[in-house]
View 1 (tube, helix red, strand yellow):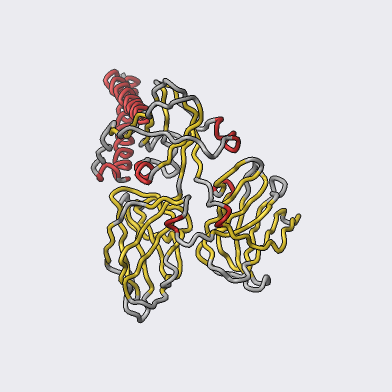
View 2: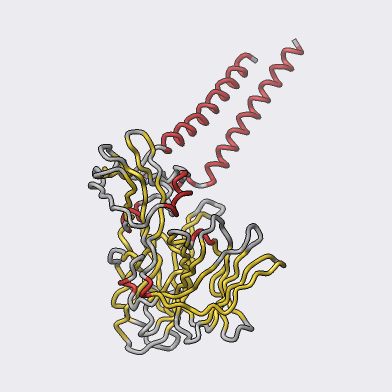
Amino acid sequence: MMRTTKLYKIFIVCFFCAVALLFVKAYAQKGNFEWQATIKPVPQNGFYHLSLSPSIIGLSAQPQMGDIRIFQDQQEIPYFIRENEPQAASSFDTLTVLSYRQYDHPKHSELIVGNTNKKQLNQLLVFMNNASTDKDMQLSGSYDQKKWYAVRETFPLSNTIVRSTGTEMVALLQLPATSYAYYKLSISDSLSAPLYITKVGLDTLPSKKENPYLDQLPEARLKQVKARQASTSLWQLSYDQAMLIQQLNLEVSSPKLFRREITVLSKEVYRDRRGRNKEDYVVVGRGVLLPDQSVLTLDNEVKAKQLYIEVNDEDNVPLNFQKITGWQRRYDLITYLEMGKEYRFVFGNPTIAAPHYDLSYFAHTIQDQTPPLTLETFQRLKQPTTEEPRVFKTVYWFWAGLVLVLTLLLWMSNNLLKEMKRKKGA
């Protein structure tokens, strides 16, 4: 019995040591950042902004850039991130507000605007009085104000605010390219009073390259790959690193006249129940490609190294793409820095939680025009973690370990019972 008791104690000690090692490993990973840059000294105390380049956003280890930190020695410095403001009013074309009504069952507001010339829209700008609230919204389109068709499914107001100055804030509603005569914005008011909307309009800039709140991504490699169906062609768009993609500008070299439905796909890798890697395509955008309609806005921003453009050729000659250019929304990081102090800008930690700073609640009080700050050359603090052998990531090892532990426990229990019976017989 003494031998069995010792084995039992050894087993318990080994079990708790393994659990402790897992906690130590998780804790050690929490503070690991992959990239660091020194912020050049600022000439005076105040708020400064840093334009987050496609490279910084691409290297960030989290989709919403929640791993970015600024340190002064070991002290964490608060910041907030906002999108660049919309274009100047001279390029803003107001749409007629036909009605704005509130309903009680269910409690919501409906804003209807007219697009009488049936202009092609891929975004709407909504101006409203400042409000500290978040609401779910839906957008639909119609040709006669009787039958309405889906344009964009439910999305939160907070994700659309691009500017807040004085007493006014502006929401940028991204939508797939459409040309309905009427648009209806449905806003849920179940948790708060309605918004005070002042005007709605559209972007009249002739070229997305002139858009002041989009950044062009580095040039991507483009090649045609095997299509999924006989009547389609498939093109692969590849970047050297992951990029946050919002829009695509597709330049066709031939034929001269065409009208093709296109689908933008992202390849998703997942594990099945047996722990094996599987791949599947996920639709991230749809549109119609015409000679004078080459810009496609994705349903949501997508962070990826590769995208796939699927063209429905039907019985036509496949398109030849000359170039496909990617664009991302422009993001600025705003922070308060003091003269004479040294600051570090770090990021690249997939395990750290996103920060929650009081400064974000006062973002609307900070002027849009803040001086820029400059970063020194980036340094890699650590190499990317080497991936463990695939076999150890499968569920087979979990079940094998569980069976081993249960077998050991049964063996120890059996020995313990034998010892007790032997002692009782003696």
